Image (cartoon, rainbow, N blue to C red; front, side):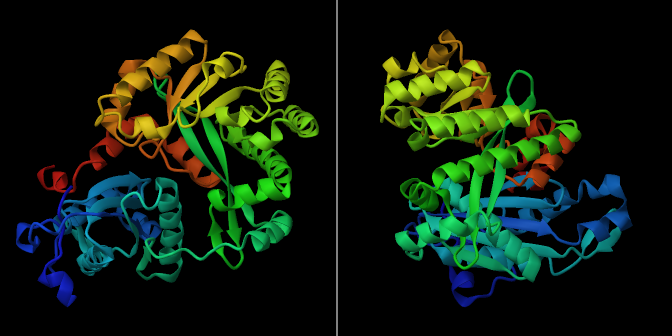
Length: 444
């Protein structure tokens, strides 16, 4: 792992000329990177700048911002998020490295940028999250960064979140009580993560993900409230609400010229509930939407006969079934051959180490071949690098999903993403080049 700054500039708080990774700032060999950091850099006066420089030139302003970041922090990894924002990733030894990096960026944008011979001031919203490796999963990091970025944008200040600090304990009973009123209070919302069909080079479907913005606790992650919803039997109401919202959102997508399959996660506790299956199927049919159900193979194991019978009923009326997180649990060929699934999703634990492991490529390739033999399409989850995408394409993987394409986003952001056609025209050129070390921009 890379070693990052831990030297005198960081200790003294003097970050005016600080650049991560500069040899003069590296400490001794014991400064080993054990933390992971993700930052958001957003141009908040983009609309004003666009009026001055014109729409065509405004589309390239994010490149100018990237170049200035590269001059200050040459070792970070950069990803473009639309026309107005960048996400940065780097490793370090502690939360002080994140504070120093953001302070350095703040000073870097204190002076105007030269845009084609004219000087313009860029108002930049800065935020960042950090945690020790393996302590926090990628989903929580992304969601925490999104919330921190929103706060930085609205309050126009640097927002830093140390995720190593113990999260406030969730009182299970209080969480269950609050769930009962969360829907009627409008606290639930959906985000969508698109899936790209590799051969067609287009977004053909998306996964709907439910989120809870609690009025006092803030963002409550699914890992906390879904088990509570299952225990309190609120999971059926949450899922039916999700289906209704997806039907409404699909109408907006179709009106904008985007006709996508959208998949909704179905809890294993609901697969044995005949009343729920009937109600959910009726709502999907009545809404006329292209909605599929995602289930985990392990959820079938609770009551396989009933679950498989219900899934066959669902498949018989044209609702597609996808098997989620394949390989993460007790994968069974006996169940796999009985499930009426059209799609198999390979768990990200295999995909994220695809280019750094000897065994994972063998597992992924054999899973793709098995799924194709069973007449299923294959989606690889957790695709984060161009190298992984290229290897999956060679292996014959049908679809990819992951942060290389897009993180989970709101419906409005998904519409913009589809309109901008970033997923491959951008993924191969803009996004591919942004996923270089920032020092790349010095040579570009």
